Image 1 (cartoon, one colour):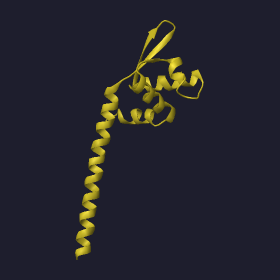
Image 2 (image 1 turned 180 degrees about the vertical axis):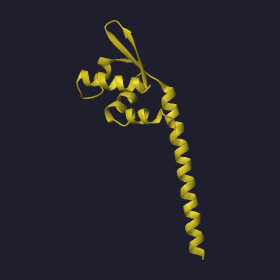
Image 3 (image 1 turned 120 degrees about the vertical axis):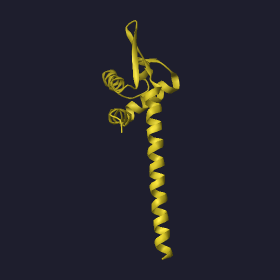
Image 4 (image 1 turned 180 degrees about the horizontal axis):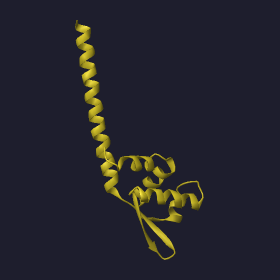
Length: 108
């Protein structure tokens, strides 16, 4: 497991941050003010959430006038999707092994 996993999933584990990511995926690059409209917290809290998402590599920001424009980074999300897919396959294989073992024991 990569050292990227913990900060990435920690960042995505908060409902407000997850809502921010979904909003940026749906509507594209957005200012802090636009992101603020998506979640019911103060502007300062939105800024902290965005900074945490940025430190996890999930978003980047650029200055546009007095505002920051936030853009979602798809590579970490693709990595998370691949990671979860691999984990799901391992889980499915473990369940299949358990099922086979239980069925084998039931036949005896």
